Structures are given as structure tokens and as C-alpha cells.
Amino acid sequence: MPATATMTAPTTMSATTDVSTSAPTSGPGDDMGGGATEPPMPECGDGKVEGDEECDLGGDNDDAGECTAGCKLAVCGDGLVQAGVEACDDGNGDDSDDCTGACVAAGCGDGIVGPGEACDDGNMTDTDDCTNACALAACGDGIVGPGEACDDGNGDDADACTAMCKSATCGDGALQPSEECDDGNQVDTDACLNTCLNAECGDGAVQAGVEECDDANLGNLDACTVECKTSTCSDGIQSGSETDIDCGGSCKTCNKGKNCAVDTDCSTGACVNGSCNLPTNCKQLKSGLPSTPNGVYQIDVDGDGPRMPFDVYCEMTIDGGGWTLVGRSRNTPSAPGCADTDGGGSFGWRAAQGSLADDGNAYSLDVAGKGLQFTQVLFGDHAGSKAFAGTIYRHTVVANFVDVHQNTHYYIGEPTAIQGACPTGASMLAWMGFTSNVDTFHMRDVDGNGFGLTGSGWRTCYDTCVGGDLNGKPGQIFVR
Image 1 (cartoon, rainbow, N blue to C red):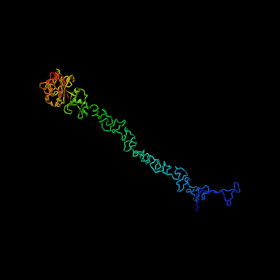
Image 2 (cartoon, rainbow, N blue to C red):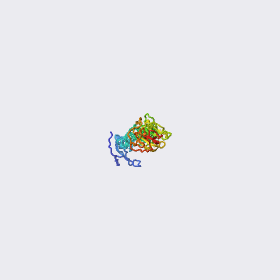
Image 3 (cartoon, helix red, strand yellow):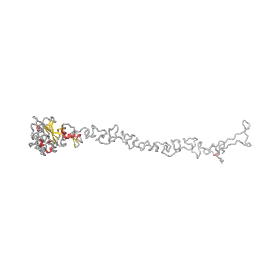
Image 4 (spheres, helix red, strand yellow):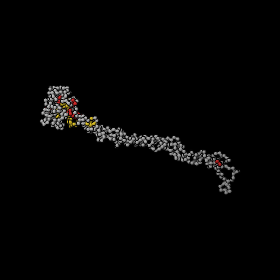
């Protein structure tokens, strides 16, 4: 069994030799062998630490042991892997290769960036800049790293975590299953709303270049139609304030038969039960269309009733307007002055005579026969055509005047400030609401205002038409 040598520092050999025991040496140039001799060379493995040997275990010298085969003490970096002590030893001090400068095999988590590692922070925290796999933290690695809201490890933008590692939200530019669109902006007037819905008419947002308006409703009866266009009076639909297609409201008036809300919606001046119809009289026409001028118009006294419409002349300026011409007298030798079948008392009221258009002759409407309703009567001198020339007098009658006088010649009612006397008879004014005792030249309105007629005024008591002259001179009778 080889002797055990101690690991001591090399022993310095002494220069003094024992003459008695040492063999003679030859000096330089001494062919005869005279002079000094060299000491023997150290022999590694002889168990003796000699010369430059750091150790010598004899037969136990081993490159894998503590004393190498070269009689050197095993150290990390000598290129020899000391068994049980070193995991590796590549003989360099490079920490970045497979074997570190500490003779430890490089591994993730050792704090040293080795081969195949992008980083190595020496900790086991997976949520910092360097993962536990020694890879730099990155979106898509499946680990929620710094600056990431999520990381599902895929590049799918259509799930709850986008490819940018952001939680999916409307406006992130990534289309989610619950979104119709997502253009990544906060502009509400383009094709994709800020709610990630496709822009469409009725969503309340005006789409630039496509819509003129968008009021978020599906009605046409306001300033914006269901097609998201501004309501106009020529858009071919009932829109805005119109009561029918392109008429009524703020647009032009509607023709007969069109829908309406008020009289002013109609060209006829009369809105009856929501439909444009003919006015029942000139007063209704004036009320519905205040700017209506004097002229001939058609009226329908009972609307949808059995009576047929007929033409009348409407006086729209005198005494507030809205007067309907019912009688016109003429003092001419060639033409009768009034209807005299019953002594003139029915002129304008229960006898039709003449033509409305023929101003040269007498005209009588036949109010009772036509069913025209009124509450006031207007008397005036005739000036030519249908215009007034002289003083105008107004008389108020009972509200049911026509109904009362359908089958009677005149009305016997409350006397109204009678002055003087007039022969009892069927005079026109007596039939209109006065008693038969009507003063020839004086009568009073029911409100107490005197008419003050002169001797050349209306002859209210005549039972017959005198010389074709109703009431003494040519005149006209209007009602409303």
C-alpha cells in the first residue's frame, strides 16, 4: 500500500552534499569526470513533493482528485473537474458559457446570463422583466409582465385579451365577438360608433357625408325624417309639421280631401274632422285664411251632408270681412230689381234669382233653400261690380235665424226700439227679425247702435219691389 504523503509546500533541497557519500562529479570541461554534478529531477508520483510540485500523492494522484496527475493542487479553472467538488471546469473565467467561473454548470436562475438565456435575474419571480425561464418578459409569453393588463399567450385579438396584452374594450381597435365594429377612435360621426356598433340612421349620431340629421327616432313628423334627411316641403313624404304629403303646417296649403289639423292647413280654408273641405261660409274661409281677398268661392254648408256645394261672393274687407252676398238689387228699367213673388219680403232669403256673376241684374241666393247659417246681416249701397259705395249697416239676428224661418214669412219677436210706424206686412226686414211695425227710416241694431237711415236710404217696409229698386236704391245684402 503506498505511503501517504502529506500536502505540504515543496521542500527546498539543500545545496550542501555529503562528500563521504556523494559520488564525485566532473567539472566543466573535465573529461575525466572531475567537478560538481546536477541534483536529480523531481519525479511526480513518487510520493515526494519536490521541485515545483504542489502536491504528490504518489499513486493517488488523479486529475479528478485533489492532487492532479501533474502534482498540482486541484482548483476551479484548472480545466480539470474535481470529482464531488466541481460540476464542471472549462479552464476559463467566462461566466457566459456552459460552465461558470465558479465551476458550476450554467443554469437559469443562477443570476448569470448563460447560453440560451436572454436574461437571468437570479430570482423566481415570473412577473418581472425576466421570467423564470430566463426569457425577457414579452406580450404573448403567457405571463402577465410589467405593463401588461393580461397575457393569454396567443395572438388572438378577438378574445378578452388582445394581442397587445390589453384587456379588450370598445375602442381598442380590436374586434371582439360582442362588437359590430371597432375602429380604435372616439369619433362618433364615422361608420363605427363609439359604442362599437355600426353607424345607421336612427342611432342619434349624424354620420358625416351620409346623413343630414339623426334624431334617434323613427318618426317623420319632426325636422328629421326616418331616412335621416332634413324635412322639406318637397321630399315626397309627410314630414316636419306637414299634415299631409308636402302640404299643411309650414308648407303650402293642402287641397280638398287632404289631411289637416287647422283651417290654415287647407287651400279651401276649412279643416273639417281632420280633412280639408270646403268652408261652410265666407266667415270660416276668412278665419282659416285671413289673407283671402274678395272674390267668388265655393262653399259647402253641411260638409258631408246631402246639400251640394255652391258658389258665393265673399266680401273679405268690410267690417272685418267674412260676409256672404245673399242679395243684390238693381234699379234698371230692363231688369227686375228684386224677387217679388211674395212682395219682396223673401228677397235674398227664400227666393233664388239672377246670376252671381251678372252684376247688371238683381241676384238672390235663397238662403233658406241653401241652408246657409248666419247671425249678422250687412246692408250697403252698391258701387258697381260687388263693391260697396255707401254707408254700411249691420244688424244681428237670432242664431237659428234660417231654421226659424224655414216655413214662416217673417219673425215676430222682441221689438227693438221701434220709432214711428210702418204698415203691417211681410217686409224683408220684418222677416229678418223685426216686428211688422218697423219705422220706414229708423231702426236699431240689437246692441243699441242706431243706423240713422235717411229718406233716401233703405225702404224697409215695402211689400213690393218699386221700380226694380230694392229699398229705394240699388243695394246689397250680406250675411255672416
